[in-house]
Length: 567
Image 1 (cartoon, rainbow, N blue to C red):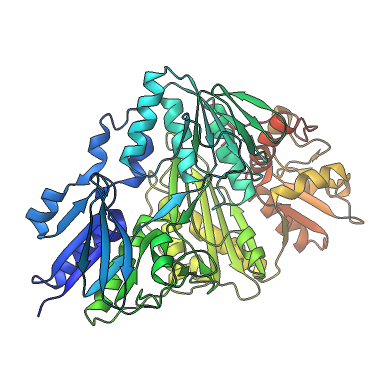
Image 2: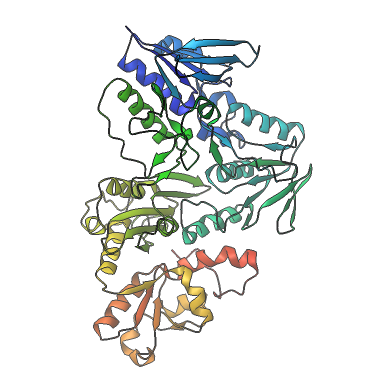
């Protein structure tokens, strides 16, 4: 006797459940209910309609019910909302959202994939005004574009500096709008650490986006927004992108257990606490592979894998649900950002002892045309050296470096394993030692206590405290811009100027990217110096790390001339 499988919700999770079930069972009756008009569309592509990159919003729709029926023999029913579940009788209640007609349907197996809802804080005055929008589906993006066009809106505010907020801000700017992005935390993109986020923030400012961090929205009017700081920003439309929360209303009503993160609790096979009810996608609580703690992860690939494994479990196939690490990437104008695993902030939250290194090689051999800096940060456990995470920012395909680290994390490997990792090399593709190799070498040196380092985020405190900082770049480089109070002793001269390098106090050494200063530090240690420290990220990293805050916080600059054209 064939199964009857009902799926609640489409898109990445639900549609993948239905398709996988059909591949395993040609005789199953598969019904998928979607309360909106589109059962399968590309969530990630939604913002690109605002710039015209995707001119027709209908192109975001991937498959319609007719295609599901003809190609997969799946009954995809749109504009129908599942409003009730009777787990004892194995029945659901379904409401036609157009006619309000309610019907009942039986199931053998039920899979919940309702996704997540955008957060709209009720404390914000005007949060339900007609000029306030969220972006969850094709209907939403059409409403936004129509409102902007029909009302000839010029200024738009985006609230939230995560992936959706940044993609929305970028596409609005490319569409010709005056864009303000407001982020309540101290920097955008919580998936990367502060010094890496500063590079992205500078890129957004350079492209004309009014970026405001460490401030929150308090009021929305028809022509402006008000922030907690008292600032008033002209704005004809507001797009809320501060985050999402799992859509668990139906699950809770049916008695499905919800975890501490607010997502639906599932076991290794994505079963809920109720028999014959599974759950996948943005609505569920998953386990982090490294911390082993419950978390939420709103990404397409995990949703698709969860869907596949849930159906495999349903049909008695062996699965291995080992948790998630959160690999993700995003383009921001000419810059690309990728990350995987834990950030420093996440390590601190999880009380994991860690260390990190930053290397800034070129993305290809330096003499090749258009060689650009590649900022690569590696986070690893201390003292074991197990790899915990990585972040990369640059104009090249930085996802390839981060994908290597994602593989290493998955296989529980260590920084020493990166030293001899044989990766593809050709002058137009990479440096001979890839950024991944370089980070592994530096990290291994730190594990072995071969030298000391501080991060670029600590340089301001060093300058303000009067610490001894030595710049080992050549004199002409120093004159073009340098850290204030830094002493210029070029690498080409330091052996003849050792009397200028103090031995009675800490000395901090930097160059442009950290390579020359590292060599000087190693040489001084070999000469018997015991208190010399390399500045990780060096001058370029300091420029990137300090620029945004100096522009927005009216702080006293610690750099004489910010230079971003030096690599």
